[in-house]
Length: 204
Image (cartoon, rainbow, N blue to C red; front, side):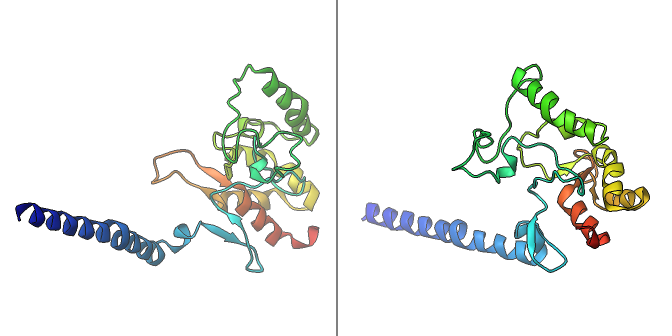
């Protein structure tokens, strides 16, 4: 009888814990997230002027046009490459990940000198580290403020804007350090380019 009693007690404890940690706790976290942090809980989605979702503040997108502030390079092309037609091999590292190439690796040097560095020089942009090196995740949505400022002249000339207008946009779309102490300030490229289109919509 003691065995049956202990078995029933164990089953009850298991059921109570299961209800607590598998049902009540997850639902409570979802409710708290939706009530207090709905923007973050739903993926930090960014909408354009028409109210359409165009991306997330947490995931970078490829911008290479002279009309926009360019993103930093990505080993996976921000996961937009077609897996059935990936001749450049951008998806070899997976959906997210670094190239793991050392600074002395010939493949890395060839890419930087043969493509990115030459393009930036041709555009009159002084290369910064984050404009030629990929990030650890290869999905970084930010560039440094210095990288954004380096592109002001090119974007201003292409769109017919004043440099001080773009400087203000950069300041407005710069995210500070996490909790004021962790990391470095960064410019969210998608937010910046959306603000740029809102400022200069007739430049398409």
